[in-house]
Image (cartoon, rainbow over all chains, first blue to last red; front, side, top):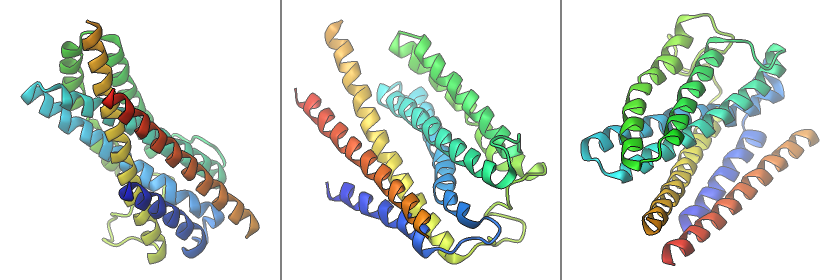
Length: 217
Length: 35
């Protein structure tokens, strides 16, 4: 319970720091605040999808359904954080670029990511046998993740983008006030902890559902 | 500045509600695991 309370205070402080302590970027104005939600949501999406891939591989090696629970839960949460990043990004795009959607390389990439992982969840929903579902989903997830680093880190660096330079850029240092970086970093830590908490809850729900299925059978 | 504080308040409220929801969900899961 102490860890939960700490997480609550941590994220509340990080949000407050982003609003009251970190300065505004002159070009972005008040919309700078969107960064503190958009950036961590996008990175946690990558973390979640990576977690799903790792547990898919572990399932294929061990055939332990606990790994399948982790892979499914992480993919669901990855999609949830992906939607959060897309919605916050669209609102930001409307304010800065004049339209909610511009088919910018990053927007196109995240659209494809949502399609790929939407198909993963559809695949899972279409198979009733848990062992067959786990095996096919693990194979799909292991292959699907190959697209994530390509779509998130490579494509936006190849084509012209409306997005500003990424944090990891050719000059080797981010063009950002240190207070903005600290606030965004604190939000990233908070979002990561929130992801693992939600993941644990989802895995436990999956385990309960399997227990009920076993009892009914 | 006041608009900024309103948005901050809404953001904190949303986070508080999500937190409470997750705490309640965790308790419910604990009860189901015990039963």
